[in-house]
Length: 371
Image (tube, rainbow, N blue to C red; front, side, top):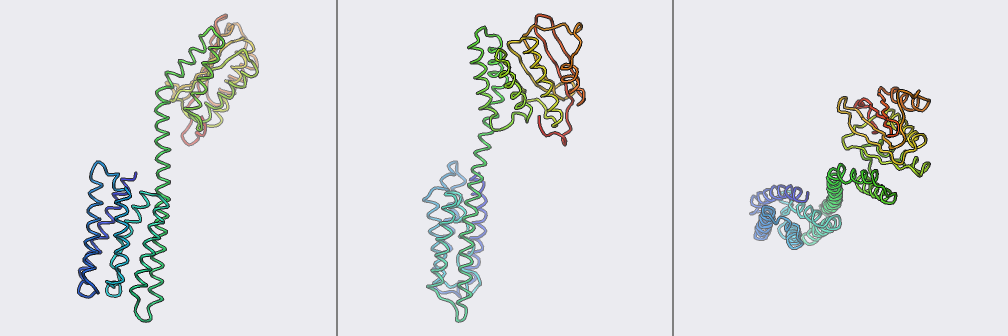
């Protein structure tokens, strides 16, 4: 980020130096102390070349080192003050320094932030006032010259403050973006590996303590990877909240929630329907199936591009053909899902657990808010 800003400053510096040189040479025979004018052109040209070359090497960071920045600021202050002897402004309407000092303010702001930007702006503003005091002004023009000097000085200070603030915000955004990208990369690598391994250990371990430890570690890891932001929107968080509520009500039942990174976003009504149906399925697994462990898994439905959700338990199971759907299955699960255009399938073998499979069609991009 810094290099991009400094490259832009190089363009400003060259344009300002070329204009400074042209104006100085065209008025060389009309100004006081032309040798001082030539010295100012040479000094600013040397700094312009050196600063440009510093950015063309692999170690471009040295363009922001205090030594080089300080040298440019010193030359800028000297050229601004030299107007007191050259007195080019009354002849050409432009002071010897012109807009070239702006580059020094911008580079200082990039290198040192708000403090350096405001500090250099203030220093150059002071140099402008010193030049006016030493050089004086034409009869009757003192007030106008003082107003112009103050206006320019204030502008330099404001530019330093604004540039320093923008650089600070850009650095913060760059850091946050880099951190988010690193976190997403870790999440992508671990989601289908470590997290699901912990879920498998939790489900198959014969030790209650090991199973609980695996569940706690899985939740801690998910909190690190997806904490502070929804994993795919509101659905993952709400499913986990439903799982926590069930575990508090039924301490002998543990729930693992896994939401694929590919799970689509859904509009609010569909999220509410899915969470409500999943909550009812969890309650049935704990209350009627006496399940010790339930796995909630959400992913993209490859056939429709919508959401596929499975609630699978290790409870006593039932015979779907012999069971009449009660209020919970018919209204709380099937009714909710069918109301949003989805479908529900119950799969179970007596003595070998049960599974509720839910498929919900995709939401339109405009309607998607949570999921």
